[in-house]
Image 1: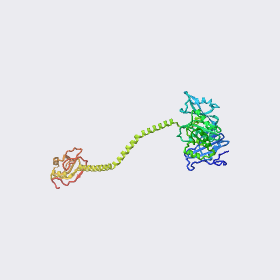
Image 2: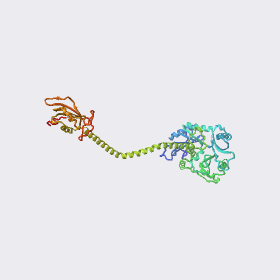
Image 3: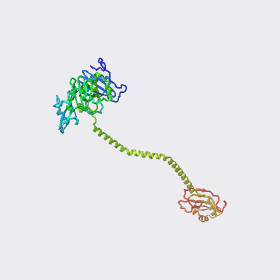
Image 4: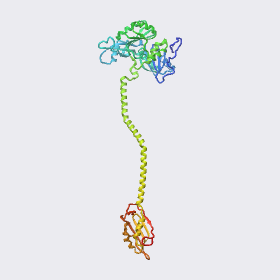
Length: 500
């Protein structure tokens, strides 16, 4: 079912996979599959990080064979880039009138005169040719280079990708991808001649821009064919010729008559290492497959329908997105800046509070102690102001009462004083007590009763300078202070002129 191409031994039925660094496979890098359709033969190259695997398949069911080969090599690409043989695609420069209108419609109209099949049945793409081409352009017109493929070729390529369970991301002419293998620092008019079997496939490049490609049979004089191609692209000569593919030395000698430097293309370092591992008998075909796999997003003359192409951001879209992202970022920063400044200020205040916390605690401790002592002093003052002092009162009553008066009970409180006792004439005691500087409103609180030789009395008096509702007992100095009533009863065995 499969026919695999020999690597070094033509008798072998298969050749080993080409690997740059088997120990360092970059698993996160997606595998990229490039496939070149060479009639009934498929040539594939898969790059996965630094890993490269290249192989050829020829079978009655190429899609099934390709899928089986990928599974056998433990490769799992999800997409495929397809390169068509140059002979199956029409590539040529055409003149377009310099008028306003849709360029695609104008190209489609002009293609009717250049294709053996109708433009309606063709997939095509175009590139504008540079205005600085030698010889200038025809007045009132401009040139584009057009690539067109029959719909049957495109349908076969798409069907192959579908049956192989792969998503097509590009369908181009295989040789148009060769510039992806060289460095981008190149200038001038360059001709790249790639020999592939019995044909030369020729690229005409202006720096990095593709101008034209041709297929030339090996029996023809390649140098003459290159000179003949200068006319359509309005070149007088080229600055350099690059040679690759089969029979490089023979091709180089044939191109020497052009009188320009002829040499190897300036491959990238990684590409040069990859090409060194390819077998000589398939080097030219596998090189095209590697170029198709290495192509970037902007492949020249893309034949895949726009609806099937992967979406890529254009330069203007990326710039717009970058500006929007910058605006959003500035907006977020503007919103967060006040909060950030406030948090910085809050952190500063917290640090200052932490430094003052010890002093604040010491001050609070002193204030608590001062408050405790103030409460203690107030309590002492309250006790002093509300305490009835009986000794000064007893001294004064002793001086006021006559000798024949006896006190059996003396009761003092904040309202006044009450005396209970016996006397020869109880009524005479009222005036005497009225003369006291401490007492006022002296009166009997109960009727006087007569005993055997004395009168029993009970006299009540208020403190001097107080109302009947509230009274303040006198202090030691004779003053008065408000106080809570604290009644005190003092028993006096005798007060006045009687026995003490």
